[in-house]
Structures are given as structure tokens and as C-alpha cells.
Amino acid sequence: MSNIGDAVRERSKNCWLAAGLALVLGFSAPAADAAEFKIGFVNATRVLEEAPQAEAARSRLEKEFSPRDKKLVAAQKEMRELEDKLTRDGAIMSESERRKLERDIIARKREIKRGQEEFREDLNIRRNEAFDKLRRRVFEVISDIARTQNYDLVVSDGVVFASARVDITDKVVARLKQEFNQGNSK
Image (tube, rainbow, N blue to C red; front, top):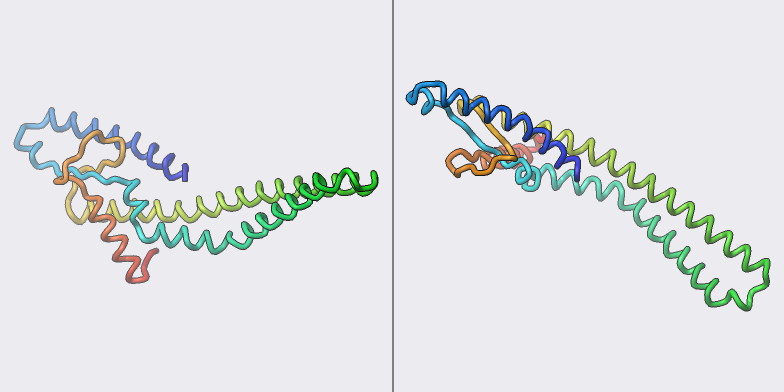
């Protein structure tokens, strides 16, 4: 899930810029105006860990890719059994039998390697699709909470400290759970 980390890092770069802008505005405005700024913080990593939509996406991926994974594991087991047979019986086999078995093992290793690469690529593509949709929804929920509750600035990861007073992570997670429970995971 390094893509989630990449997205969070990219978003945190933008948040640093916004935080810097807020600080400049805060220092340049009179003290009474600065007190009117409403700033929130969201721990995006925690949201993506706790959102039921993320667990549902992981379950769907597991269900989708489990049969292929089992086939690969079975193929590896068969190949190891052939290697064991070659090790155990290779000395008493005819030269042609041994060469045939060695070629079969090499071909199976190639096929397993190709299957594993395809599996990883397909899984990564599907995982990215599923979690990109979730990341977009999380962003929409954060934006909606910010608008409806009159936040001037909401920052994410990359923040050194955020007090509980400005942390709206629980609100975001609660909204996502509510949507999920209502069957409206968008």
C-alpha cells in the first residue's frame, strides 16, 4: 500500500503550503481576525486504516485473488515435489529421464515466475483502483465537513503537532462508517 503513502505524502506537500499561507495570514491579520480562523487536522493514514470501506475493499480483493493465489501455491508445491524426486532418485534414473525431469522443473519454474509477476501486477492495479476510489471519497468527506462546519483550513499528515481541539479525524471516520452502514459507500 505504498500508493496510499505516496498520496498522503503528496497531499502533505500541499498542506505545508496551505499551513504556511495560514501562518502568514495569521501573522499579518490583526489578532482579533486571526482568532476567527478555524483550522482542522485530519490523520489521513488513520482514516484509511479505520474506514470500513477500506476493510471491505481488502476483503473484495482477497476474495477476487484468493483462487489465483491458491493455484500458484499448488504449482509451487508440485514443482518442489519434482525437485525432491530429482534429488532423491536422480542418481538411479536414466540419463533421458533425468534430463526430461530437469527440463520439466525449469519450465515449471518459469511458468510459476510468470504467473507470480502477472498476479502481482493485477493485484496492484486492482488495489490502486479500489483505494483511489476510497481516497477520493475521503477527500470529499473532509471537504464536506470543512464546508458545513466552517473550517478555513484543514491540514493532513506532515503536521508536527495538532491538538485534539482541531483534530477532525474522528468526524471523518464516523461519517465514512455511517455511509458504509447505510450502504452508501459511493
